[in-house]
Image 1 (cartoon, rainbow, N blue to C red):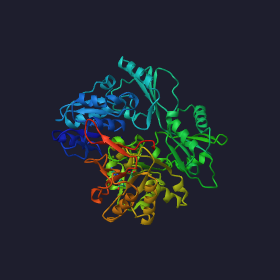
Image 2 (tube, rainbow, N blue to C red; image 1 turned 45 degrees about the horizontal axis):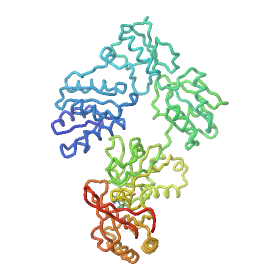
Image 3 (spheres, helix red, strand yellow; image 1 turned 60 degrees about the vertical axis):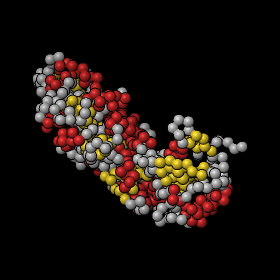
Image 4 (cartoon, rainbow, N blue to C red; image 1 turned 180 degrees about the vertical axis):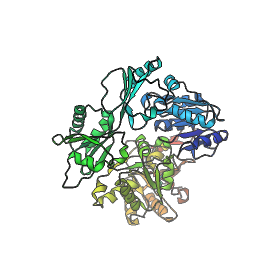
Length: 567
Ligand code: SAH
């Protein structure tokens, strides 16, 4: 289970929060910035709770139940996928499970209440009567049909008893009305539910399907084989294929539509890709081969109990290079957030890795100094080719003077097929020039260019030449890396060149730490700009001959824009 986020608003709740924290390995206490120091800080309760909820993180909030409900209310549409949410009184005197009945909220409420020596405020009737949620089997098991499950529990609540067929160790302690001759049965089986309404079918994820070859029709082949054996799709623990097909799109699509993890294994060349050989190579547990059809290239293995997919072969590794945007969480693309949530390993310059947080304690962080970019890119591939899910973070956009090009350069230079089999993708972000421009108005409203003034990776002569051409072409210019302690004179030189072509009244926008705490925005005339106005955290946008400004009506300051046309 993902460890819960224990959220507090003030120091008064810290003692109770720490007691709850002690119950869950790797859990963290989240404290309101400026009010209480905890493991993770957040600045706004509502936004923070919604973000945690949207990520599927269980929430234990030490505040009024009503506040918690109001905060997550906008996200409550999808009942199937909600994480547990509980409200706990600051002093530990009340534990109220609010949401996530099918995700184990009542189990959490019982555990927390027991530790705090109070009774949990459980309101779920089945749960109250039987001491467990029959419809919430543990990891590795899946309920065949939720609607039927609800009817079944109502029958039990109406006074009927049930038999249990198959292995259901988690029901051992439940106070279920049991009887060997009962009409109703709870059946734990990989066999598909027949549709009978006197049984509650729970599938152990105990079946592995191996397919040879790749290409289309995989899903249909798998479904046919399962049907032929009367097995349920929900019993699948994994779809297994040969490592040779790691990058095959059809396989990935089949696994996604079957909603099972995809795993790969290698067979001895003389054994070939026969599906039963794949099973033999990947499974380290006793199993029965139920279906071994060389013509359709599908074999099925059934184990006595649920199988942990992490013990089957290995996953295709992933490397996602993301841009965080300028800094604030609301300017990060949801795709970048999703990649972070799924990551096992996060790489990047320490400052950016911190910006990407809060991360979970089970996520490995490989922070580094800013300069070792190629080494970091290679490290990312090494981790990903071991099957891990790696995220590389850049600020702004990863393709703008950042890690995406370094990652591709590392891959381009590498022969290792395992690196090339990694599922590589790049998620764009809001670059500093865009974020700064948006705050100023629309200075990039017409043709513009982005230039890095750093001569670390290119000779200064090239920079001068590009500046001249860009200035002469009347492009708006966005300067990245404008100045640093190691490069003190370059900006003055650059401005001298630009001044040869542009009037002293040309508008210049300076954005510093845009989207980050303490960010500032200034507009200044080119003639007045000094290099002391700029540091390495500043974005410099030099307007073209048409860039203009006018006073903002209400809040003061100026809108800057470059019209879309020329006179
Ligand atoms: N990939 C980043 C740029 C990295 S180069 C992006 O797309 O934004 C680093 C330079 O970007 C800094 O020297 C500064 O000029 C600019 N920069 C990055 N973040 C900034 C921010 N939040 N505010 C202003 N400038 C920023």
